[in-house]
Length: 387
Image 1 (cartoon, rainbow, N blue to C red):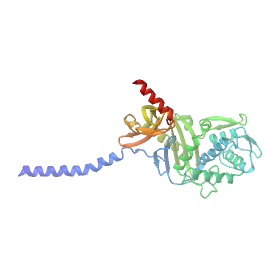
Image 2 (tube, rainbow, N blue to C red; image 1 turned 45 degrees about the vertical axis):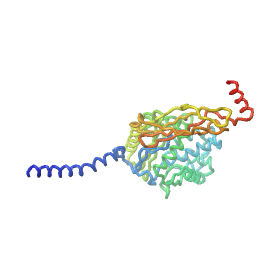
Image 3 (spheres, one colour; image 1 turned 180 degrees about the horizontal axis):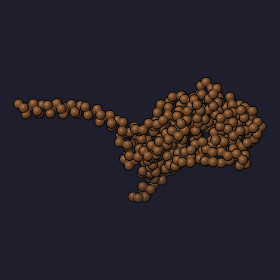
Image 4 (spheres, rainbow, N blue to C red; image 1 turned 90 degrees about the vertical axis):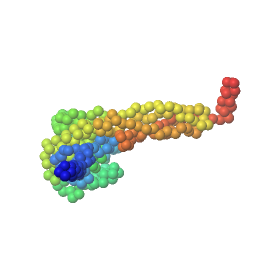
């Protein structure tokens, strides 16, 4: 009887332990891929620029004052105007009274002073010059107000759902609704990085303008101290706190770390560093070269078969999964002539476990025309000759 009681008590205790422990283990598994760190800021996001994939986010859709990070949109429109041939790097811009009236960070333009687009761009990117930003805006659109309208239009085109601009530079003493979310900043940063020339400016630590008479020092300390840093833009005001869109590139992966509303410059830089470190430590690109995969039968063509090739692909994956990628091919057995070179005949799907990571097209290496009467006749003669 005593042994029976002991066994019963032991069984009950085992059940209680199992019930108590199991939920904790399940919870740990679910949270295994979530970063354990927290960062000093109101919102943040980490994006890979090439793919647009989000690797981390914290309240990333809250509209907040962006301070001088605003200038990313200003710079984007300037770079697009240059690409469109509306202005050139060597064009001279005459500073207006309005541009010269800007406070905060500036290069102290004098009314009527002329400066090249190149030097004005350096001043905006490196030293966050508010007067230079307005001068560029006026050169492109005729007035700052007209340029701001273009900024809001471009934001809408890019799908920036939580942004509204009231000026070109982020000064927020007199604005009523000049806001941007961390996600939106990442979106416009990604778009700006497509203009590779911009990082030639944003990676500069120190330089000069006005023939060497005026020095510029980058407001982004990470450019000097973080391996692979490429930019991009800092900002700070009493309302906004300390903000940054910090970009860095290593091993072909270009990361964008956006920090908004941090309490000090050092904590902002530390938060951006934490995000960039997390991205580079945990993610990498899986690359597969183009691969010829064999013949596809051609029905009614001048050729009976044609080679097909699977295109190359690069996928952003967790480093822990990089060696475990598998793929399957979905391929048509035959095609009817005529067919064109590059015509899609299937696709290769890449997986991590059961999760689909991406696809690449399988295409024909050459085109094949439909066979004509004489082509058929020639084939028949060739067969007869065999016999």
